[in-house]
Amino acid sequence: MNKLNKQQIVDYFNRSYKAVDGLWFMKVEKKYGFDSAFEIDAEVWTVMGKIQARMMKVFLGHENNPNVLFESLVTKLEIEGFRFTSEKTENGFRIKIDDCPWHNLMIKSGRKHLSRIIGKTVCINEYQAWISELANSMKFEFKSQICCDSKKCIIDFIEQH
Image (cartoon, rainbow, N blue to C red):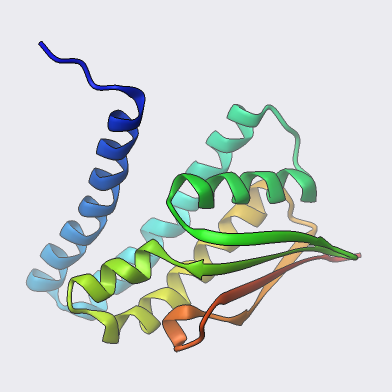
């Protein structure tokens, strides 16, 4: 039997992860309508964000603070195939996303018109979940989003005092 190398295993799970997200959404949408599917999707990604943040904290072996949030989000974005830059700022950090694999999947599936609706809600819920798990002294603000016809997603994470 042929064995998969580590990259093939990563690719397998990455593609499966993204495929199951779209597949379950379309099946729920077909049976119950877009609004119900979207409501459930937003709830799922809020919980998923918490699960991922907790796993990342275990993997990286850190406590809760803004630096852990920064390291964890950078790692998450790298794993999920985002093209982005990140930089520390005076009171937090900024992430600039040049290419979003989730938005690209929406375009590929002929659902670009829904990307704005889904991206605005799901991304906000997901990032808020990461903050609540890793650095609840932070808040974040989208300056722009690719799914809202911007060239980049620009997200500022700011420490609240």
